[in-house]
Length: 103
Image (tube, rainbow, N blue to C red; front, side, top):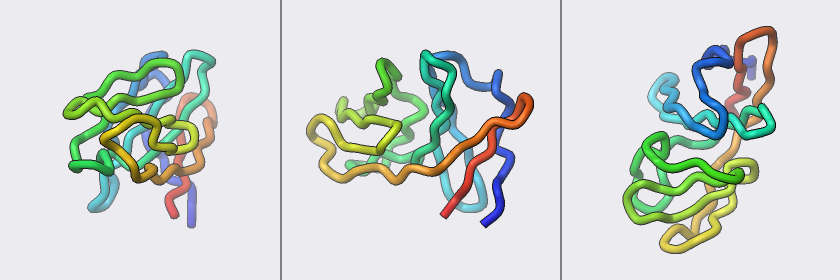
């Protein structure tokens, strides 16, 4: 699979998330406080709510609907009601662009 140009590095604020739609799928792209970029599926595994509307803090994303919590670096479900992990995707930065490897 090729790397896909997802967004500009400055499209994502520090400790924040944006929604990225590609083909028929929705993803979430995160920027950590230490300026690293991450990508997960964009919908909560509990009730398919867009995670880009959630709160990002300390490498975690909180779902805006029921406050489930995921570690966006690993996709690990950290707090009920979520119990299914998020899929994660490899990212890289080239210049001022963020690329994602979708599998």
